[in-house]
Image (cartoon, rainbow, N blue to C red; front, side, top):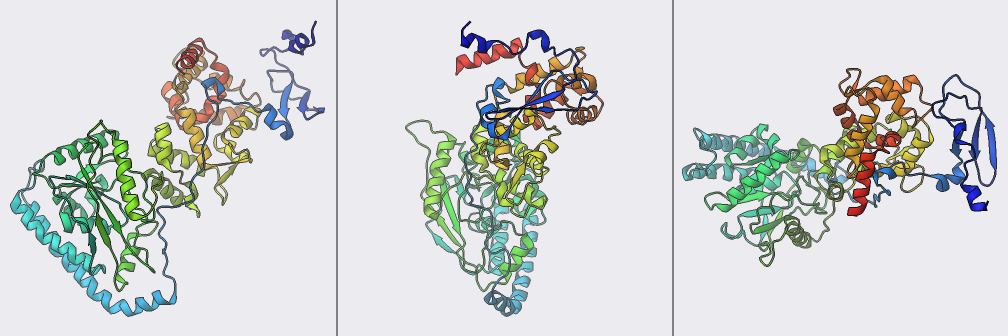
Length: 563
């Protein structure tokens, strides 16, 4: 017999390893390099599926590491690096410096006058707007001209409000294009001052979140602007908003449509990625860029309370604002241009005018940042991951990303935003085992013993969006449901989990069972099972031994042929 043939022979005959024969292991073989050590183990009364357990020494981790998701077609993932830039951070969140305090003392009498002007303008504008809206029920059609004339009173009042905030003069460059030439305007979004200015200057229709309708005074004003409401978390709502934008842009009877494609405010030092609502209709667009030059007081609305920002504005001698209307950009006529490409060209023009870069951050990053801030994280910028890039690759929704962050924050990340192995397995209700280690190593792309939120998010999204993931969930459920009653009982669940982690105790199986039992009725339905795995896609590795199923094998073969 050749040496090669001898190496392929099993160390033990097949009868020596019977997964259905209870045995008590007496030794653990620890593989080191180059020696093999045998460690005694105290026999227990728990059943074990095999005679020997194999653990790897840290020195040989790279040699013995396995990919627990290879059966799903995964060869790993690349989280790539994130920029350290925070496009939402206000640069002057606190009052600092002798000059600022002296200026505030001097401005106290001025503030009283400004507050009076602000309140008077608010009241007059509110009454005028209510008058213009009184009895108007046909809101699906353009506002009648006489009502628009009444709204001029409100527009003048908004100029008074800007004056009270310290915007005594506003520098303009360029001019708005005729409505017939560019029915849609897009602007960067830095402060709550932006929409107030555009209301005074152009009286456009705006696209706004549904939540703005309930805001005092603001809700009344935007209704008069024939606002297009959108719920950014609802696909159907976004689709309806795009259709409404098309309708308004197509008719000169409506005012021009104004959108802030970034979807949230930034600090003006970068542009973030654009939402596509303004670009899908395919009409010519006029970009507008807004700047707030400053030395001592950053007027951007980021990580700072609205009341604080308003107070700081009242306390300035003068607040600077510049508005530049850029040349109209039309979609390509030579070939049908995608909305993404149209948005990219517009973003480049605006970034060039502002002399900034456009990052891959999006509104979803702001949602992540807000969640981290809410959880008491001091360095909350560590949890921004440039979601536009991730959403493009994995089609991950903002709400899914926030759910993954909530899970990650439960792992107690340290001050650098990293999580260790023990906290990782604790939150996922796992037990220390070779499989748990391999799952952690799969996420730990840098192999430094800790994972970042971006690694956890991208790794989870990578598994969740694998083409075979839905079928793997279905196969795992069907194979676990031994009596085929369309539910998995606790005993069936334990039978499915034990081959993956043989040392699980009954209480640990019960704890993991409760994670899958979404509705808490003591049994796992297929909906419970799939919902849990969608929330915790890394757990699918525990069912790998069930996935060697003819349907999944056929799907893998078909996928390989396609690739």
